[in-house]
Every structure is written in structure tokens, then in C-alpha cells.
Image (cartoon, rainbow, N blue to C red):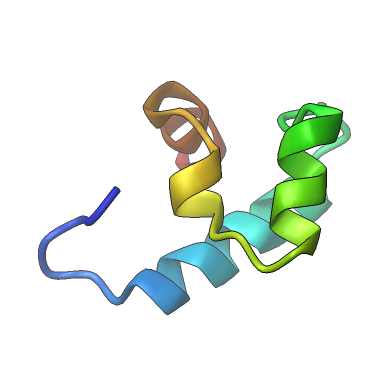
Length: 55
């Protein structure tokens, strides 16, 4: 999900940090596998999950 004006790698890093800080489970097992295989959190997470992590 491209976000104009933001570097996708920076956003992906920020989302990864937020995921590590929280105990909540945002990724399903299949999403976690996709991420561990090099997928971007911007592509894997839903828009609602991204907003929840960034707030």
C-alpha cells in the first residue's frame, strides 16, 4: 500500500518496531511466514492494523 510522501522502507521499519513493542498479535501465522520470507508489512497488514499500530 503506497503512501505518498513516505519512504516505504522507513514505514516498514516503524511498523516492525511497533509490532515488537506490543504483545497483541497482529499477524496470522501465514502473514508472519510471508513477512519472514521478505514480505513488507505495508503489504501484509490491513489498513486498519497499520492505523492501530501507528496510533
